[in-house]
Length: 401
Image 1 (cartoon, one colour):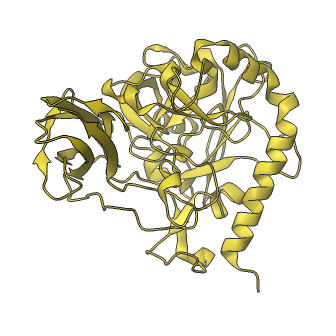
Image 2 (cartoon, one colour; image 1 turned 45 degrees about the horizontal axis):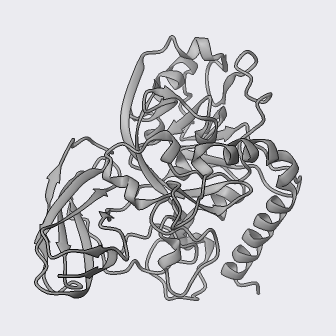
Image 3 (cartoon, helix red, strand yellow; image 1 turned 180 degrees about the horizontal axis):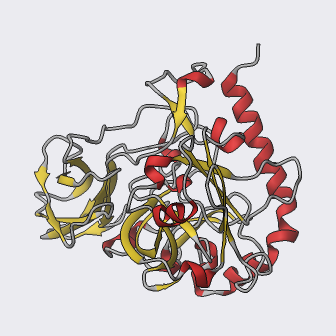
């Protein structure tokens, strides 16, 4: 009998290799345009670019954590993630583009961008985070992009409510899920389409958006232009980019990206354990998490005072209640001061002043707790896909007095 985990890894490896091998022709133009921009200059962990390239084609790149001293993450510093790369400009030509709404609805729709603008406009500030952010820290290692700390960002998203569009279409009583598909396509017929679905309740939430603007500017191509879903409080796999098709259905979407990928165990499992598909569930809400943005790992700091700054966030509509920082590898903890704006779905900035008591190496840790008691473990329970890492952030610095 085939081990389900082995089957999953094999297929994921196949998909990665297949897509990567044929992506050059389809994505070369937009990768070239990105590479010529300031975003790509000297990209790398020690470079001057805010983005660290993890995969070049299709482009997957994370933000340098130092950028998170800013409450809003600028568009050109926001992490980039896709399975196939963005569609061609012809595929999202504004004049021909339509958002099609069908399935279990009373009135199928084909809405132009101008027609979408007639719906009430709303803005939500929300964290967007890749489900695999932190995957590199799981032990033993799991396959997939080895994201570290920066596949996350906080932005102000503007658009229309998905609920308003669905109300125009009229959801039938049998509708329970909303399937989402974008204009991006794999260039190999053997690679499945990226189709995700969210429960109808999440789709009808007044804060779930179809966003066309990001931080006050038109949505960039690499971030889903002309339209993407924002399901605030949930992982970014639910925030589908380049949206063109909405299908109301009785059941979750079928296919690899719902039935196999983006799922995690319903209970903790031992590394290497066989996990049956029935014991897996879709990745949905984010878990509570915090990061140290300053000082940077490896920094040399003086005798003090030293300002330690970072951000913390959580999932659904929960709020950050407190952040604590340890300057001695978890032996003692000090409460940080929460600063800046406190909005649902957005992350919370925090800071604490440290007065080192001697010279030498020091381990800085942070942990957050939300208003429903959710907290961070020292390390996240292992899972075969490397999702939902929220272990305490750790930064090693050197004190010189």
